Length: 330
Image (cartoon, rainbow, N blue to C red; front, side, top):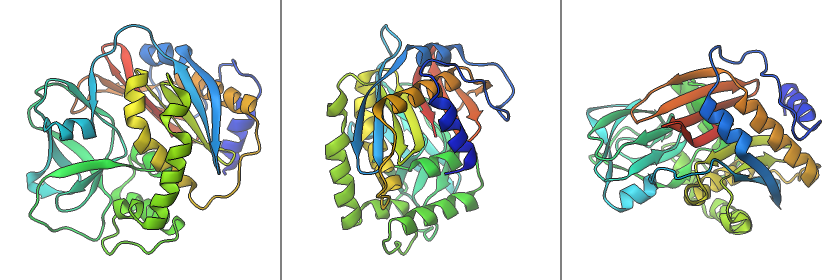
């Protein structure tokens, strides 16, 4: 763990309700009222543990109706979502088309299998109903392949672990993303796939057994009504994710949990802090995110993506019509 992150965690443990000053290096610009409302309404509650992982379940959120949203897997299973290579394929861009009548949420870090090589989504995107074909930005997570006649992609509930998600939010170059993929596979202590595919690492029998154990211990049934979670590996805060409602969180949580389990793989050291301390850290991180300055922009979907920095953390909140659909901090 870096000294900077240790300092953050020490400060975060001082008080459960203290609003942190935005650290130096935060992007210049206004804050996000929608994000401020969400973080103020979220409440850290129960703590769950399994091996090196600890979760602080987040409850509450904004009242009122939220837009109907399908996940990537749900939209593809219904035949509504099509993701393909461009007519003239290039590494950093794909074409997406939501042909259904419901919004579809694509999450930064979701891994897409197929095409000429597997890709990972760079950012959150909320596709509108009947979107028509739209270009989206991606990175490659299969360095050793550029072949195949199949143009389509599918999601198999694989997501990038927090360390790789951080590279995506940093907008690092492709070489750094490949380096992080290699590091992640080496940390799993398995033979790398011939093409360097990150997705194939998830399918290794010994890895799948560990992920299944983690999923049984920490799935969403352990915290009914939660809308998000802060995840700690050992004593290090790895990520915080919160969604517009409990239903969407439940449907997205499995892929996120398995990504956290990959990050924690091989780390046998359990955290040394009690439940109250972890809840204080979650409260402090929420307050820091809510008070952050940053920049908002559009992308291939609808709404605005508010991006911000908190020293060692990177964050993005996808705001649609004044309500945050997804907040991710890594």
